[in-house]
Image (cartoon, rainbow, N blue to C red; front, side, top):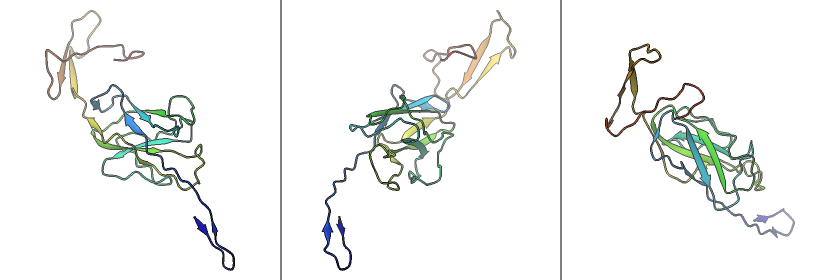
Length: 187
């Protein structure tokens, strides 16, 4: 970098700028993501450049044909997701791993954007922007089965019930269903 002032001797200052790669995301054990499915994106970086402290790093999911916005750009979150401003786990600074929990309401192909705020990296304000995280496109499939119906329509306790599923490529002797209480249980 060179700074010059008229009538003064030029001053040269050497600066080392280390550009860190964007983190790479994975979905853990999920190989097929569907709408409304709880989704945790895990971000990894070989450098201690990530932060899960509230108000630092951010995640945004945008349509695959949209560029990741700048820091002060509009919120282009797609598919029913919201910009993640409180990443997990905990409130860690200078870490190699963060995570983001969301779900998407619309099927499609998405791009995952990640903002390393830089407050913990001593970056100058205004130099930050959301950039596409490594990991490729995020493919979200329609719900399958798409619908189900119950006979009788209003079942009672101790009554035999038939449940019919409709969807694409369902395999009657391989697919499984599980009925759980409406509250307090997960599939």
